[in-house]
Length: 172
Image (cartoon, rainbow, N blue to C red; front, side, top):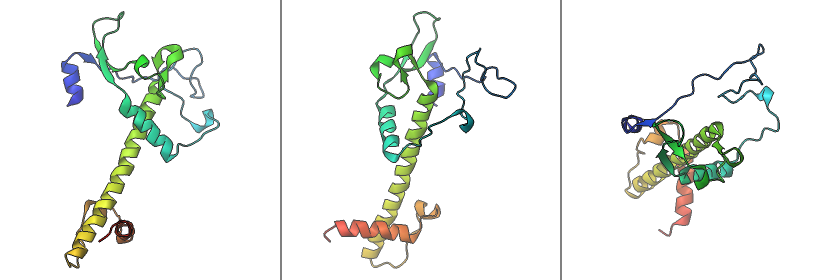
């Protein structure tokens, strides 16, 4: 719906479909720039996976980006969607030196935000299960309701652990 509304407003949403030419061994050609980043482990070194804290930091960066629509001074009348480099030069995707946004980093930041939100949602489901179980327990009902988290395989032991933590913190 958002994309359709932006298109109706004249915002150009350009999709990059072609990665450009490759060499015989399927590596990117050095002569022609590619719109796709090399992602194979064989092209990388010093690989370090992000910690939960680093994912949280990237999520904060994504959430602080001020998206805008704009027209390029030279390049036609089409409106584009994105963020303005000078507004957030410290963002992981900001390439200030070259006055551009690293689209691979920008996409990876969005993936980090999705991962953090999914993690937080799973925790909220466990918390709701624990609280629901506590209410049932206080109501003297013996059967545990089937919740969304339970259907996803969150077991009674996880709910009980969360319940024990909640109970330890409360002064009932």
